[in-house]
Image 1 (cartoon, rainbow, N blue to C red):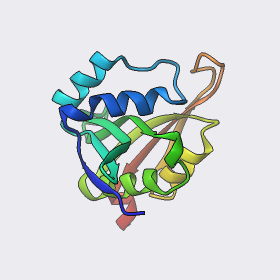
Image 2 (cartoon, rainbow, N blue to C red; image 1 turned 120 degrees about the vertical axis):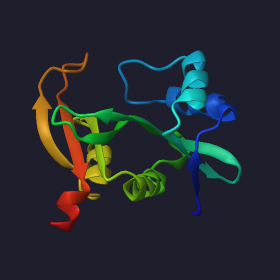
Image 3 (cartoon, rainbow, N blue to C red; image 1 turned 135 degrees about the horizontal axis):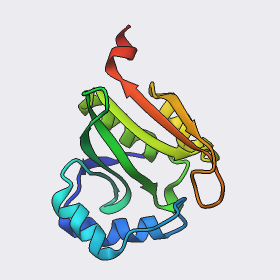
Image 4 (cartoon, helix red, strand yellow; image 1 turned 120 degrees about the horizontal axis):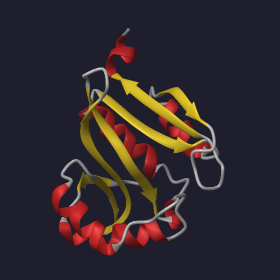
Length: 151
């Protein structure tokens, strides 16, 4: 499938809301008003479009890590259930790797698909926090650095 990966626009808010609320792995889900905010102000948020329809998103923002390094913090990555296992999440992540030399995120330890997509693109698990999620699940904190890829 050929996806168009592009920055989010305000008119994408409803589609992103619908995708996130269609069976997403989250303790909480964002309201439509939150999506309107994200689509207007979080300019480092990306969507995947297929045949004119937004089918996936990657919400993030630039942060300063404790070690005073700048990183792209992935806050939410979601694919419409009809397009899961189609390669779209990997395509978005490949796009992200081109733009951000350092990225970080956390995932539920049971989310093996997300972990595979991240680790296969150079992310490393650097910390695990037990009982982090409301279901008692472990959180994995991952970082990808371009320096690791070249050295």
